[in-house]
Figure 1: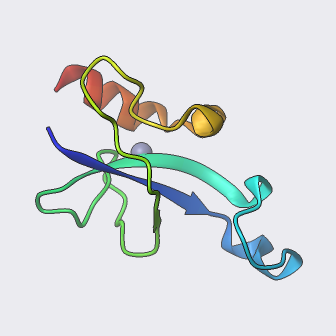
Figure 2: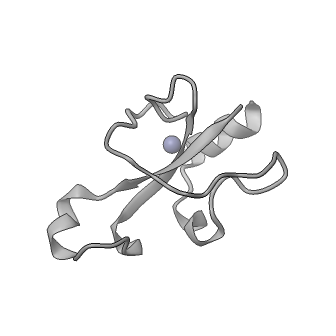
Figure 3: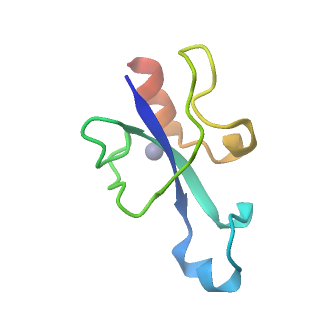
Length: 83
Ligand SMILES: [Zn+2]
């Protein structure tokens, strides 16, 4: 399955932080199947999520970037393992 990696940000805190990508704003990192691409594997609408530049280069590499593993969505991870 081809996926893109997106991060869900905490909206309620967004005004406390400046521009950029502070790690404190991340709520979870999800996987979205490229087709149809509108929902994460855990069923959340992906419209508001921020796409990461990271792209897994194969089935044996982690699906999310090493510096974002603390925020791995376990439901997305399980769905990817089962795929
Ligand atoms: Zn998820």
